[in-house]
Length: 501
Image 1 (tube, rainbow, N blue to C red):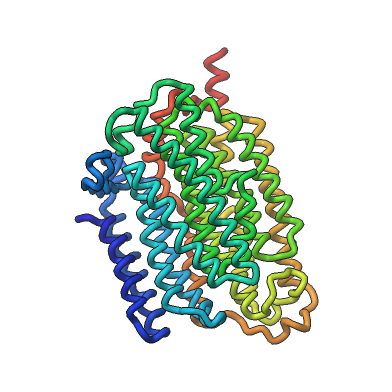
Image 2 (cartoon, rainbow, N blue to C red; image 1 turned 30 degrees about the vertical axis):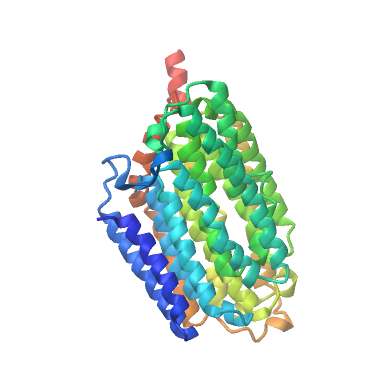
C-alpha cells in the first residue's frame, strides 16, 4: 500500500478539485472534506507503523532521473511520522479557522483553499523524502504556496513580508543545493538516496563545509538566531491560518533537517560545530524571550516566542543525547499545537476588534470568557506549565542537555522564567482589567471557532498527562539516528563520577 503517495496524491487532487468548484461555500466544504480524508488515511497508516521495525517504513522507490541517480523515494521513521501527523492534524483545523479569511479581503476563496491543500502535499513530501535531491525539491517547492498565501491574503505589509520570507528561504535553499551537488559528487555513489550516502564522506574538513551548507539552510528555515529576522514580519502579516502552518509545520523542516541530515550525513562535523550551535541556541532562547516581552503587536509577540522555542529544539538536537533528541522531536509536535492555538485564538480576537496591538484591548474575559479561557490554556502551554504538553518536551530537552552541557542547560532554564513574563503579561493586558470601550460588544467564540480550538486544547491536555504514545514512536528513531554520531549518549554525570572514583 503506497500510503505516502496516496496522502500526497489525495491532497493534490483535492487542490485541483477545489479550483473546479464554482461555489465558494462548496469549495470550503470540499477542502475540509479532503483534509479530513487525508487525516483519516494518515492515522490508518500510523496504526500500521512498528516503532521497533525497519528504520524506514512504507518505503516507495521509483527511478526519476536515472542518469543522475535521482529517485522518487519516500519512507518514514518515527521522527518523520509524528511530524507528518502534526501536519495533517493542523490542516483541517486551519481550514475551519480560515473559513472567512479570503472573503474578508474580497480575494479568491478557491485559490486560497487550493493553496492549503497543495501546501499539505508538500509538507508530507518533505518529511517523507528519503532521496536527498527529492527532499531539496520539496524544501523549495513548499515556499510557493506559502508565498502566495502571505503575499495575496495577508495584512497591510504583506508584500514586504512575503518577499522577505522568500528571499531568505531561497538564499538558504541555494546554499543547500550547492552542498547537495557537492555531496553527490564527492560521495561518488551515483545516487542521492539518503541511506546510501550515510557514512560516505570520511574526510572531516569536507564534512565541515558540507555541514555548513545544509545547516545554514536549516537554521534560516527554523529559524535559529541570528537567522530569524524574517519570521516576525511573515507571521505578523500572514493570515492566522497561514501563520499556524508557517510556524507550526514549515519551520519544523529546519530542525528536522538538522536531526535527520546534519547528524547522520556529517557526524564528525556535527560534533565539531556543536559548541557553536549550542551557543546560538541558548542566545536564541534568551533573546527571543526578552524581545517578546517588549512587543506591542500580538502576532509579533507570538512569533518571537517561537524564536525562543526553536532555540530549545536546536539545543535538544545538538546535545546529542537520547533524552534531549527525543525531547526536541516531541517539542516540534507540541510547539505546533500550542503555538497553533495561540495564533488562531489571537486571530479570532483580531478579526473581532480589527487591531493587532495589545494596547487596544483590555477586559476581554468579561465579555468573551470562552475565548479568554482557551487563550489562557494555550498561553500556559507555551510557557510549559506542568500538565500541558510542552512541559514534557522542554523538561526532556533540559535534562538531556544537562547530562553533557551543564552551563548551557542552566542558562536555558531562564527562558522558562521569561516565558512566564511575556505570556502572563500579554494575557493580563488583553484579557484582564477594566473592559476597554472598543471591546465591550465583542462576541465570544461561535460554534465553528469552538470546533477549531477544542481539538488543540484536548491535545495539549492529553499529551501533557500521557505523552507515551508519541515517545514510544520517537525514542527508537532518535536512538537510531544518534547511533551514527560516535559517543553521543554517555552515562549521566552521576554515573561518570562513580566510575571515576
